[in-house]
Image (cartoon, rainbow, N blue to C red; front, side, top):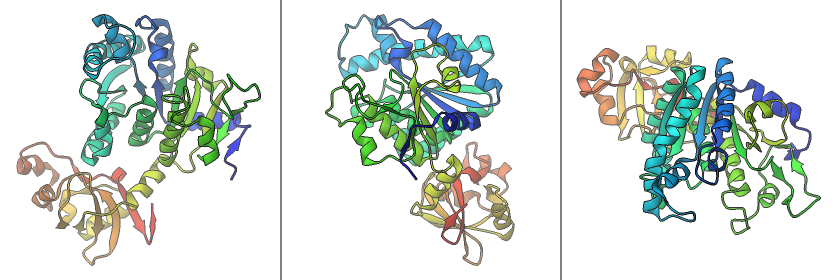
Length: 386
């Protein structure tokens, strides 16, 4: 399979047309002008695009910068780099304004906006990962549009994503998105810097992140690379591994998503598999921390693609936390599945064999009906996951 192609618009259009869940990354420069004022007309046009996608029955998640840019003007902070404490203070003020801006833009279309603040720890800690995934899934099910932003009020350099390209790719993987759209100040990936090389060509389709593709984006020390094309290539790698296609296209136009649908110049990065398959393979390849033994009825239910409920659990082995990988076996010891546990081992032992309606009374807090959700489970057939 070729790594790149220059004839992708039909393919790109088909990728976007099939997508049922779309993540859109919005940078500060698109949303906020150099004076720190909100670009209200641009945001209104983006909101129309989002509402149209929602009207088609598609889920939309926005990963948005802008809180620091909005907050620093209100606080009277001078242009230029900010100290960490100043950035956090600006974010605390700006997050309120950013959420209000999206709420006001989406409300005329009958779309509910929901603010979701995350840090790098939320994606690296499996317990937090599952909590974030469940929250976003519930918001989408209820018809809301999550507005995701890095929680700059608490994030330090050690727990920062560092750029919203990377954050958007992580969110796309976490949410099981089909497509990630990076709205940028460039219309795609070029073979060289088009500002310096008139012979530079845009690549319309990338099917594999090769060393040659990485070289086109420049090294970390290349002028303009930090927070630029290099981070977008990193985001593309993360998205593609999660089964999510990604597009880089210009965002500084009215109705940028509609423009992409109508064939605006861009670069598409096409994933080799779909999000569900990629997630199952990821789970299947994890090292198990314990075992769950299930009865015959639960074993049949798992084979039919259902979640594992507490009445079907008849044994627990090992010590594991919520979000850890566990093997699921039947009474004979046959391996049925590998999964991310919805409870830690102690809680699982307390509720195993009990009705789901009893969980809250046993644990002293509302529990989840599924001790392992079907979306967090890879059914094993020999060495394969399905």
